[in-house]
Image 1 (cartoon, one colour):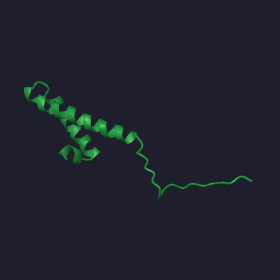
Image 2 (cartoon, rainbow, N blue to C red):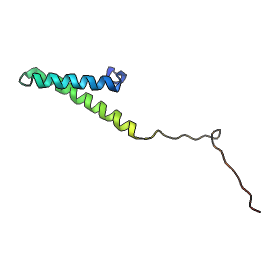
Image 3 (cartoon, rainbow, N blue to C red):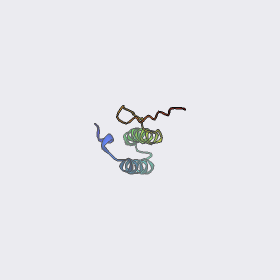
Amino acid sequence: MSNLEQDSLEQLYMKRNILEQIIRENSDDPRVREPKRQLVIINAEIKRREEAVKEPPDLTVGLKTLNLEVKRGR
């Protein structure tokens, strides 16, 4: 597991804000390529997590959790 996977979503938002500020303030510096690269990775991770939240979890039904009722007609 990488450090990025261990970070909470709030930590990722904070890192994204810091990188965006660094990029804004140093737009003419050639070293800004690395923060831009990191920002792309963090944005992808944020998007992946936000999309995962939208999908409902898989439903697993086993014999122990299955409840069936049988009605006999008369």
